[in-house]
Amino acid sequence: MTAKSTKSLVLLGGGKPAAPARAGRVWLVGAGPGDPDLLTIKALKALSAADVVVHDGLVSDEILALAPAMARRISVAKRKSRHSYAQDEINRMLVAFAQDGLQVVRLKGGDPFIFGRGGEELEACRAAGVECLVAPGVTAALAASAAAGAPLTHRGAAQAVTFVTGHAAKGAEPDLDWEHLARANHTVVIYMGVSTAGPIAGRLMDAGRDPATPALIVENASRADEARIVTTLGDLASAAAGLAGPALLIVGEAMALAQASTPMIADLVSTAQAARA
Ligand code: SAH
Image 1 (cartoon, protein in one colour):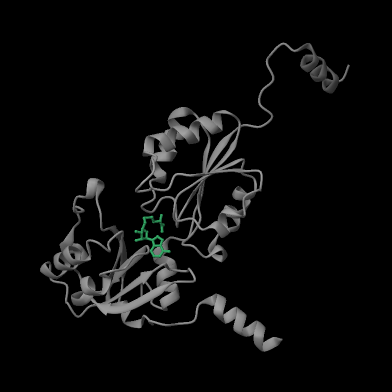
Image 2 (tube, protein in one colour; image 1 turned 45 degrees about the vertical axis):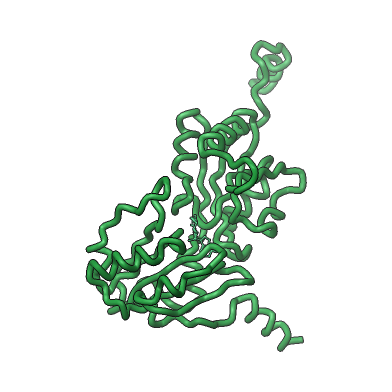
């Protein structure tokens, strides 16, 4: 008797309960800043194989449409009026779906590990013995600086770049090394900083950063409604006032290269197509 037929006999004998056809797992997928063209091929592959997609509010419908039509889509976006999911509820949901044998995609704006709480979801999966894989995403800072033509590092003007949050847990002011952030020739990118732009700019200037340091604000980076404001550290708070969409504040000498209006890639492609037609 061959090895193959022995195996079939064991299966037919029904000794052990059948294992799930495939193991469930969680993919933490970065959806990028909005433009579906900025999705990675790895993210697209994970999305195409999803049974369930658990997504937050920053993910566009266009990207969600890339999951199979049959895949269940669950929004865990923070909402003012309806129930918002607490982080531990999201963690439990991801683990439970994977333990049911499902391919779970946890789809997050930008990169899952940049101010995205992906680390907590990864730890929850590890604690439960659930396989968790990560598809990195283009974080908002990269899209914002690319669109404005303003490099985050630049020879002679920015030897380092630091990503900071404008909000710490429970709305407290972030505990940052302001002396370090205030050093010249250093780009500081502030996520979640629109409502705290005044105090943050104040801290940087108090620590010695020149109020004339160039600054850039990009709202809705990479989306059709992207808006850019070229300003200075001294005017950062007034420039940020009233912004409604997700926005980044970027401060540093290299932001002198920022252009308030440059055509988006999509516009360039359509112009080129029109020219060829
Ligand atoms: N994981 C995300 C960041 C989540 S924190 C990433 O890697 O990009 C949410 C903050 O990200 C927002 O408050 C805003 O500061 C920034 N952000 C996210 N998407 C953005 C976009 N398209 N344009 C500008 N800022 C964005």
